[in-house]
Each structure stands twice: as structure tokens, then as C-alpha cells.
Image 1 (cartoon, rainbow, N blue to C red):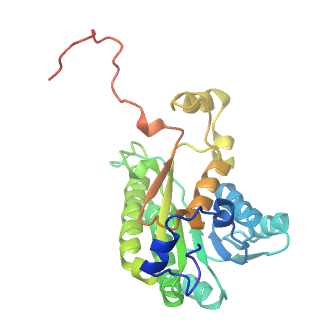
Image 2: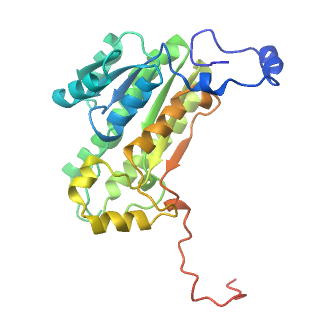
Image 3: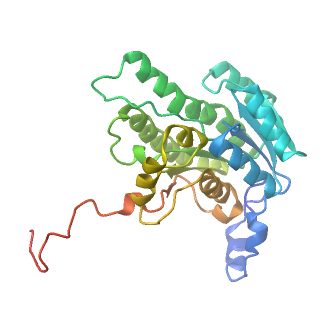
Length: 284
């Protein structure tokens, strides 16, 4: 039973009848016949997400601010992929994209960059820049594509949040503030658009070995990042793309308003050092 196409919402009677049926899980994971817009699809997580969607049968529109990057990813994918250049922080350009794009089943927005600066030192200019590069484009995606998907009665909006928006973000506080805003945006959009059949979700990566991070960190720093998580591995862009692909598929048909943490377990770690405490000590 799929739930992402117009007219496919089952009645209560249908659901009761189907409740005991064995689900064809591979079929629910397929995206054949669907078309997705990937904002920031020209590099890193966006590139891997574009490929993941295409591998499951979707047609992909790779959107990036850099023509060369967008064209390169579309060429890698081949048939069914197109590329376009859009400033996702521009209301006019996002409105035009939503108006002119043609049939679309969902939007995935992976845009975001963190500038590292203490809250007491960040300038107003940098604060506003961080807002635009983290939150403004997400709001514009909801504003323009959310309306369109609601009118057609189905679809998904999927965003990349961050664990920095779920806890503190020392040294990159502006990024954390606006990622937290993105998590709230996802919840509210899910509630407002849900009755129209539109699902809205996000993934929240921890440290991800993107090309940008690989360029600026040495081997020792990468090893420290790996060792900080319970799973002895570094999270890759492909891991994030896998989470996004799950959320847009019918495997997640009953999931909306959620932020899926993908961080190799880092945020699950106990924050206190317990090795020096004697067994049986009562701290209350």
C-alpha cells in the first residue's frame, strides 16, 4: 500500500482489511515514477542523496548555486536527472522554481554551512548570513513547495538539521540556533500540512565526513571525531542519504514531524565520567 500519490489515501475500512496483510517492503522502498528536487544537490550529502533517489527509480532535479557542480551530478546519474541553478535563499527564485518545475513528488533540502565563531564575537552580518544559509531557504521550500504539494494532496519535504540544533553548539552558536529553528519548522509544517497528505521530516547528522571536512581536518582530528562516538566509524554522506531516502519512501508513510539523528550514537553517550566513582555510591 503506497501513500504518496493523489487518491491513494486509504479509508479506515481499507486499513482494517489490510492490517493483517504482509507488506511488500521492497516495493514500499522503491521510488519508481516519482520526481524529487534536491536543493544543494551538487556536492557531499546532496550528491549522495541525488544518487540514492535515482537508484531507487526516481527522477531527480539537482539544484545548486554552482552550475558546474549541478551539471556534473546530473551527468553522473544519467537518464532521468536534470540540473538547474537557483539561489535557494531568494524568495523570487524559489517561487519561480516551484512554479515552473513541473510534476514533483517532494523536495529534499541539504543546504547549510557552519561558521565557527563565539556568540560574543559574531557580527550582525555573519549572524544574518548564517540565518540565510541554514534556515531561510528551508522556510522558502515550505512556503512555495509546501503549498504546491498540499494542493496535489501528497508529497514529502525533507531537511537536513543537525545535532547542533538539538543540544548546545559551542563555537558555532548561530548555526545551532538556526538548526534548532529548522527542527521547529519541521514539526509545525508537519502539523499544518499533514491533513493535506504531505509529510515533513528531517535528519540530524553529527560529524559527517563531507568533502569540505576532509579538506580542513587532518588524520588526527578525524580520528578524534571517530573516537567520540560509540560506533567505531565515521559517518559518511552516504549514511545521511540513506536516512533521507528512507524518510521520503513509503516505508516511512506514517512518519512526519520527526528528526532522525544520524551520528553513530554520539549524542547517546553519557556525559559524565563514571570511572572514578565507587560502586554503590549514592549521589542523590
